[in-house]
Image 1: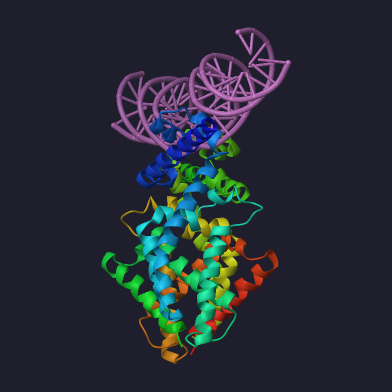
Image 2: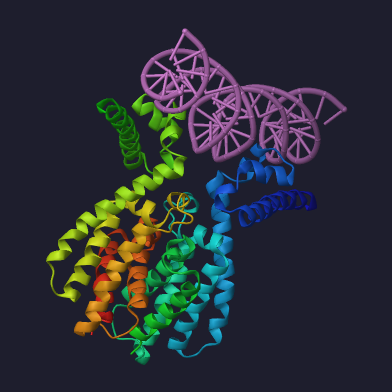
Length: 201
Length: 201
DNA sequence: TTGTTTATGTTAACAGTGTTAACTAAATTT
DNA sequence: AAATTTAGTTAACACTGTTAACATAAACAA
C-alpha cells in the first residue's frame, strides 16, 4: 500500500508547509500581523485550504506554541549534565530568561497569549504542566540537599516561575521603559542575581 | 465669554461620553471586542467622529489605562495610614494582587497590552514610573528600619514588582490551569505569603 | 468499465475591523 | 455679507477570520 502512504505524506507535507509559512511570517511580522491570508499567499494556496488542515487560527498558534516549547526544552537539555540541583536551578533560570529575551514572540505565544490555549479546553496544558513539574522536581531536590529552605515545592516553584515570568513580560511588553536605556540591562541581570541570593540558604 | 465656555464644555462632554461608552464596552466585552464602531453605535455618532476627539484607538486605550491607574491609586490611598514601612509593603502587595484579580481587563491595559503605550513614545510612561517610585520609596524605608536587607532599592523593588506581576499575569492569562481548580487559590495566596517570608529579615 | 462516493481545493460571500478622503452644514470671524 | 473654521457625516479602502457552495480529481464498489 505505497500509494496510501504517499498520499498521507503529501498531506503531511502541506501541513508542514503551512506551518513553515506561518512561522516565517510570525517571526518576521509578529503575532498581530500573521493572518490566514498572508500564510495562504506565501504557500500559494487559497485561504480556505488552511481550514482543511487546521480547525482555526488558534490551532495554528497552538502548533507554533508547541514549537516554542520544543525549542525551550532543547535549550534546557544541557541541564541533564548539571548534577548539583542548586546549580541546575540557577542555570535553568538563566536559560529561561535568555529564551524569553531572544524569542519574545515564541515566549508570548507560550506564556501570554490566550489564543493558543483555546483549542485545549478540556485536555489541559500539558506542555506547561511538564515544564513546571521539571522545575518543581529541581526545587524539591534543592530542599533535600539543603540549598533551599524546606517548604511546599509546588508553591516555591510557582514563586520562582512567577518572578521569572514577571521580569520577562515586564521587559517584553515595554514596562521597563521606566528605567534608562543603559540601566535597564543592569537592573534585569542584577534582579535575577538578587532574587537568587534571597532564596538560597 | 459664557458662550465659548459652553462650547468648550460641550466638547468635553462628548469626549467623556465616548470614554464612558468605551469603558462600558471594554469591561463588558473585553479588550478584543471593544471596537471604534460599537463605541460609536452606543453614543449614536458616526465612527469617524471619534477621530475628532482621539488620534486613534490606542489613545482611547491610553485614556482607559489612565483610569485604571486612578482606580489603583485610589485603593492604594489607604496605605498613607500605615506607619510601619514593612506593614505598608505587605498591604501594598495585597492591594495590587486584589486589583489585578478583580479588574483583569484594566490590569491588562496597564501592564500587559502594548496598544496604550503607542501614544507615549517620547514622553515616557509617567503613570508606571510614579507607581514604581512609590514602591521603591517604601522598599528603601524598609531597608532603613532593618526589615529588608540593605541593597539597591530600585533593584529590590523591581524584584518585588516582577514577582507580583508574574503571579497576576500567569493567573489572568490562564497559565495557572496546570493547578487543580481548588488548589489554585491556595497556591496563589500561599505563594504571596511564601515570598514575603523569604524577603523579610 | 461504469457509477458513486470521498477528498482536496477553489470562489464568493458574510460580517466584521481601523482609518482616511471628501463632503455638508452650521457657527464664528473678518 | 463673505470667508473661514468647526463638527460631524457618508463612502470607501484595505484589511481580518470564517463559512457555504461549488468544482475537480482520485478511490472505491457494482
